[in-house]
Length: 298
Image (cartoon, rainbow, N blue to C red; front, side, top):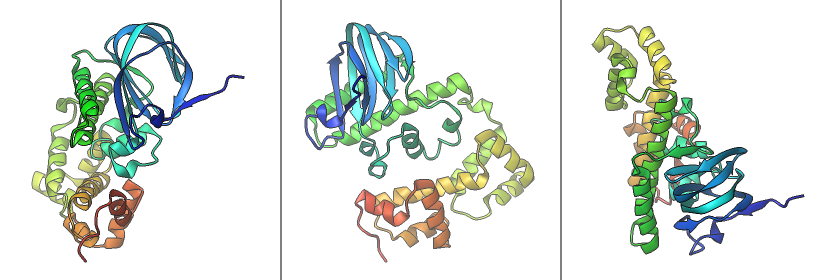
């Protein structure tokens, strides 16, 4: 019986505290193995037969893929295969993600505003092969590799922003392929107008009624249309906007949780806490503590 091989990030990291490892790598044949981290691998040369989650593919230059926690993959018949290997723990993107072991959960946090509107209806980007037609992903990875090599002040923030750009480009690619709705023309003008209105006035109460009154629509019609085109209700969308803004304020200000709740449109603190807990899976106080931000003013 074959002994299962499980790799840890510290086995590849230069320092024990590293949450990120990114480096060029010459990949020889490798037996099936799993990771206790996320891996983004980009083929810079050569070829190999790659088996990922049971699916076999011939890797070529310009291919890249993301491997989820605990997913098995292997390399066979490697011919001068060279990679940029980007290994990372979820907390390098957001400290609140510590312990997250499902890439789809990471995406929901990273794209809190856009995930339900666009990405929840398409395939997750893990465990499949993509082709970098314009080498835009390669350019971002090369920059990240240099930042990791020199580790100058702020390199982790640069890594985070460039990784987010790669994820966005990849999710956009999937969306174009499967849904074809990234183009604004695919959504009706009235719903795009409604989204812009809600984005601007999210702190106010009775948003749907106000929008419909100002634009001469019935609330039933817009509610139905909005849900059909975005996959969520108006209330769910506004709640996500408010929670997203409250997360920014918790992380970047010393306002008290009550002040933040009032600012984003919640007068009832119990309700604010309940909505926040539902979307972020922890209370505002726990979120602030997780980020290591000092308690706000009372």
